[in-house]
Amino acid sequence: MAKVIVVTSGKGGVGKTTSAAAISTGLAMRGKKTVVIDFDVGLRNLDLIMGCERRVVYDLVNVIQGEAGLNQALIRDKRVENLFILPASQTRDKEALTQEGVKEVLEKLREEFDFIICDSPAGIERGAQLAMYFADEAVVVTNPEVSSVRDSDRILGLLASKTQRAEQASDPVREHLLITRYNPDRVTSGDMLTLEDIREILAIELLGLIPESEAVLRASNQGVPVIHESASDAGMAYLDTVSRLLGEDVPLRFHQASKKAC
Amino acid sequence: MKLLEFLKRERKKSASVAKERLQIIVAHQRSQRGQPDYMPMLEKELVEVIRRYVQIDDDAVQISLDSEDNCSVLELNVTLPKS
Ligand SMILES: Nc1ncnc2c1ncn2[C@@H]1O[C@H](COP(=O)(O)OP(=O)(O)O)[C@@H](O)[C@H]1O
Ligand SMILES: [Mg+2]
Image (cartoon, rainbow over all chains, first blue to last red; front, side, top):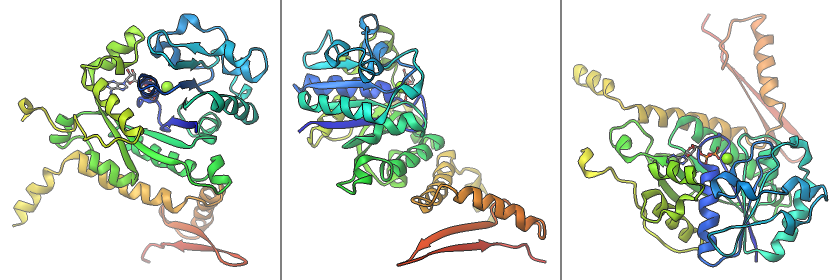
């Protein structure tokens, strides 16, 4: 059965696109047929993180408006088999995305793919609600920061009320917490919320912990999802995250301060 | 003793302040879940109306909606200053 997973957060700039790119790449590396969709109409950048910006011809809005077929718009990843990207439109206005249109696209994708990853735009308005509406599971990306945690809680409220699963009163959307840009040294010095604090406040299950890492910028400069940097801390943390998403029990890493910092 | 407490409080780390603030914020947000969209506006306007008679704080009015079997009850809590 295909799974639709939304990567969401409320707040912008917390690492949704970085995480959507890494998780979809990781799932494909594990042999799952995966498509990652950019829902950030007007401000696409998933294509840049995936390194396929020069191969974008058609986008999600073209497909919804019947100007291109789904197979014309899907971009096959150069590095990993089984991985496809559906870019967002750069120019159109946001109204071009309709719930009915999104539903049709997702239904077609469900027939072909194991995982459908939706990279949500920031905010709690229409765009973010469309990205989450048909989700089976949600990865709530949160930074150890007051505003990010508060926004994540708002998103949890929407997942529980403004999704198809909520409206049809079927099984609720399964919520996963992904803490990113975590800096264990600052946690030790008392200047950053601990992962236990965040988990306690949001009260959802922890899927992964991604440290603040220089590898992320390096990877985005090159248009290579950071999970390919398998020797880097962030790369390994995303690999662990993907394993947990596939139901494996993997111990947490990168949550303790480096020895030299003490 | 007092001095020790004072020193302790001085050293209170910013992360624990963040946690306390978040616990209050999130509890408030969760209490409003599933409430109609007009509730924040109603709360704000109630503050304005009461202020025509008594000076109250911005957060002195708290409202919530409880639905029972066949009706809904709007609960209104107003904290007035000591006169
Ligand atoms: N773990 C991390 N360590 C360091 N920088 C990060 C990390 N995750 C994300 N970033 C940086 O944060 C910025 C925002 O990330 P992005 O994935 O675009 O967020 P969003 O999609 O939520 O707006 C980017 O500059 C990205 O390189
Ligand atoms: Mg983004």
